[in-house]
Image 1 (tube, helix red, strand yellow):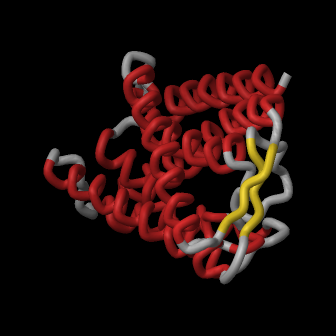
Image 2: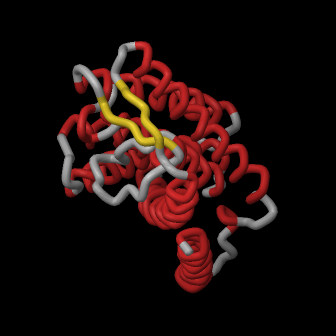
Length: 235
């Protein structure tokens, strides 16, 4: 059921976004072109999973995490939830906020504004911390914004968001962004030791390693955006 709900939510959000862009901007929403979807979405999802696995491996090296048994059903339910969450959030933060800011003030300001707002909104989560929100702004907001800037497609940031969150919650059973809304995963995990390395109750995203991994990936995508001419200056 979660798969159906997640896919339906994503489809409705994409349809609504496309109609809104057509109505307000008088153009076809090329950033969600179905032709680019298979390659960019797959690439982004695999990259998101890989980045989180690398982050958790670094946390493990610092003895910062403990894994226990979980359930396959929990993994499937988590995937369904994250499909909807990733799609809706990327359409809102990169498809709307990032594009609006970039059109007026350029890519750099758009990256900063969308990242700060994205991270700041996570302060409402039950186990939120200022450091956790700042971490999300970098490894989530900055990374997703850079992915959009580099490709001018929302499918890559949607895939990154989905892959990261699914690996975090659906595979390793970790807390996502200080939220209590996780539905379980193939495994369950608990932080261990200093929160600086483990992320503490906020989850692995508040680990310094998540910031390093996500920040470096964002840097590479920003370099690509500049080299390919997708970096835009302020008007």
